[in-house]
Structure formats: C-alpha cells, structure tokens
Length: 307
Length: 307
Picture 1 (spheres, each protein chain N blue to C red):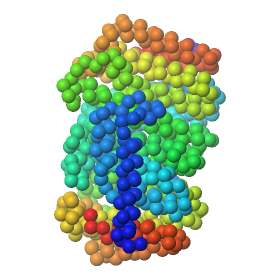
Picture 2: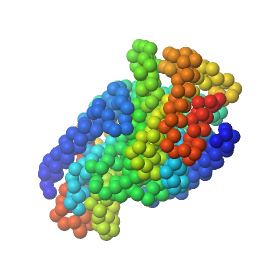
Picture 3: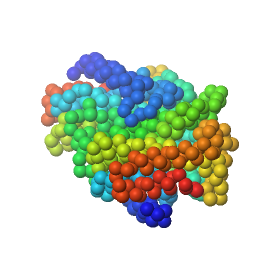
Picture 4: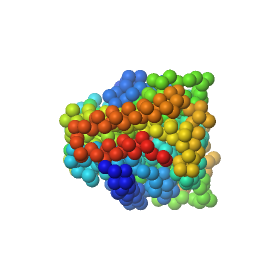
C-alpha cells in the first residue's frame, strides 16, 4: 500500500471515529443516567473531539479486519480506547502533572475551563470508555466484551498507562534525587506509558475476531513492535524535529532531562533499532498476507512520521 | 433485627471487604499488567484501605442475598464499587476540588503524597474498579457481568456521580454568580452525587441474583429511598451534629453556603421527609419477608447514624 493510499485510509477511519465520538458525547442521556451537566459535557467534548490522527482506533479496525470481524464493533471499540486515551491527555496536561497550556494548537481543558472541571472531565471520559466498551453493539458475544473490558482496564491502570505516567514523573526527579534510568527501566516505562494502549488496540482486533492462539500471538508481536517504534520515533522527533512542523516545541525532552532511549543510545543507534522494530512488525504480519497491507503501511507511518 | 445484631453484621462484612481489597491492592501483577509502581500502589492503598463502614459493599451483599446469589461474587462486586467510591474521595479531596487535608482523621492522599500522585491514584482506583467488576469470579454468566460494568459506568459517569460533583461545584458559585438552587435541583444533584452509587449497590444485588422484573423494581425503590435518606441524614448531621462524634467539623455546609434540603426545608420538615423515606424503603421490602431484615435495619441505621 502506497503512503497516499494509507493516508486516505487513515483519514477516512478518523472521520468515522470522530462522527461516532460526537454521538457518544451528545447531550442525550443513556439509560441509567440522570442528566448530563452542560459544563462537564463541554469540557469532555473539548478534550475528546476535533483532533488527532485517531491512530489507535485505526489499529483496532485494521487488526479486526484481519479476521473479518464486523467493522461497526471495531469502530466502537476504537472509540472506547480513544476516550480513554483522551482522558489521559486531559489529566497529564494538568498543572500538577505536565503543566501544558496547549495541545494541538488549542488551549488544554484546564486552561479553557479550570482544574476542577478538567479533573472531572478526565474522570468522566475514563468512565465513559468502559461504558462504551461494554455495549452490546461492540460484539454479539458478552464473553468477548468482558475480555475487552478487562484488557482495557489492565492496559490503562496501575500496571499499564497510569503506572507508566507515575514512573515518568518519578524519572523527572520529583519524589527523590534524580538518577539516570537504565535502558531496561526506560523500555519498561515506555511499554507502560504509551505502549500499553497501542498493544491493546491491536490485541482488541484479535479479540473481536476471536482469533486462534497463533494469530493472537502474531498480532500481539506486531503491537509490541509498533508500540516501541512509536515511542522511539516520538523521542527522535523531539530531539531532531522541526518545531514548526511538529506544532509544539521540539527539544522539550532534553530540556526536561527526560529519560529517553535516544538520550542513552544516540540518534543513529535509535534509528537502527527503529528499523529492526519495523522489520519485526513486518515479520509478525507474514501469516496474514495482503490483508495486512494497511498494518504494514501503519508501521512505516509510525516510524517516519514528521509530527 | 436489633441494632447491635445489625452492627455486628455490618462490621463482619466490612472486615471481609477489607481483606479482599487488601488482596486486590497487593504488589502482585495480574495478566496484562507490566509492573505495579511502588509509589502509586502505596497511594492507592492509602486511599482505599483501612477505613469506613463499607456500607456500599454491605448493601450489595445483602441485596444479593435476597436472591440467594453466591456471596463471593457479591463481595467482589462490593469491592469494585468501593474502589470506585474511594477514587471519588481521593479526587474530591484535591486542592482544586474540595481541598480537604483530613479524611477519617488521616491525611488525605494528596497531603500524604502530592497532587500528581493523588490524581493518578484516583485514576488507577477507578480503572481497577472496572477490572474487578469484569472478573470471572463476579458471576458465572458473562452477560450479568457486562450489565454490571455498564450500570457501574452509568452510576459513576457524567450522568451520575461525576456529573453530580460538577453540579455541586457549580452550586458553590465557582463558575457563575451564585444563586439559590430549587428543591428539584438539589434533589437531582444529590441523586447523582451520592445517590447513584447507593442505588447501584442495591441494583447490583438484583443483577447478581438475576431477579425478575418485579423484584428488580422493588430493590430499585429501596435503593432510591435509602439513597435520598442517606443524603438528608448527612445534611442533618452537618447542621446539628457534634463535631467530636462526627470526627470532622460540623456546620461546614452552612459555612460554605452549600445547597442542602435542610437549608431549604428546615430541620423539622427534613426529619419528616427522612421518616417517609424510611417507610418507603420498608414498603419496598415487604415482598422479601424476613430475608430483608438486615436491609430494614440498614435503612434505620442510615437515618439515625451519628457519624
């Protein structure tokens, strides 16, 4: 698949995701809800709508397509994951955490509203993610949905994304004198902070498709490889990227003394590792033949993206 | 059931809940988790262990017992609910929210740790609640578990507890000039902020017991009545209670100009309403006969508690 075909496909899925998120975040109450307070809904919408490549939903949809799982359920799963991803951005941007005023060129939720509203909006987005993940439309079989709920919780919780953010704050020297992290520590931190949700995106596709053990393992290998690749590419971008193209300040990691593999290994070795990870991702996809072309292109996109 | 028999029973279930929460919050990783960072785990444990009457788990267990549902699954459901309740306390105590330094005589999570750690601990407790709710041990039938996950999310999210906290902050006049709330607005606010989780506790018992429509409705009526009663009793305690017995400052609501029914209706009419709610709770329990004695005692306990 050529890179422009890939971009078209990514954009089309992002538009479908956006439309579905818009419906999930409208003012209508669901059974069991009393009312949706206007200010909180507006803050949730600000945090979740109108932005991003929606890469995680794309990965869910394309991995599910390997097994001919219904697209609607995969899109809804992608939305649950994206709601969860967006909650983490809202909370990470808070003054007490990374203290960012801008995201994608717009004021962050706590800047547009206030800290209390941003905390609640993040909480409510996280909660809505599990609501959506459990809906009947995700998959006809309740057992599949339960497995998805549990996997999403493990990817997001103390042993996954939230734990990774804790390790990242600790790595900045907030709670004890700062020390240099080992390569193993950095890999673990990144596997939790950003890797866990990317791995879940791919695993979810296999779950929705009720893939056999061998195919499930193949998809998991792909997810693990692109998850690591994503983070190395991110760190390289920060170290070498053009702030204008990036839409945010480059060199922020180095300025903050952040623990990245690029800082330890250097840019050249990091690029070599990135290449090996993309090869590993390709290898994992061999059993799926041409059906996996979009996922092959996604791996390249992740490694080569400029923003 | 006499009040000392009731207290013994409440205490025994609280001890079982505590033991189970202790196991859920140990250092061992679950499948899908990488590692549990020490500082985050310690903050989660500080926020969830060692305190409280564990009234919500008690309600789950006793409502499930009406239908002879297995006790182990009800206790685990109660723990999921309690983890969620505790996350809400950790976040509500934050400086950006209600800014409380003490809870049950101990420093709140952000005082003992810091704001960032408290935000993450709350996030991870909320996430763990859904992990636990989805576990096989909750109920043999995955459909029952999915219904529980969804109901928990609706009770906790924008249309439930989180939305109620938003309305409560707005009622303090944070975002617009303060105005006096109507009785209807206060009832809605309280039904969301504190009522939703209490109603879920009771509803969950009926779900675990796969109760028929009539019994489900009866339990829901009971839950709605004691949910309202809980809040009126809380407001009366704050207005009239003894700070020494309460273990926290009384009169805090009036000082903060908080929207309570007691402020609008006065103490006498509030007590009359409380009595009517307890009668309604009793009426709802008639079909269950002697099996519901602990729930009858719970309603009285809620109305008469001194702390």
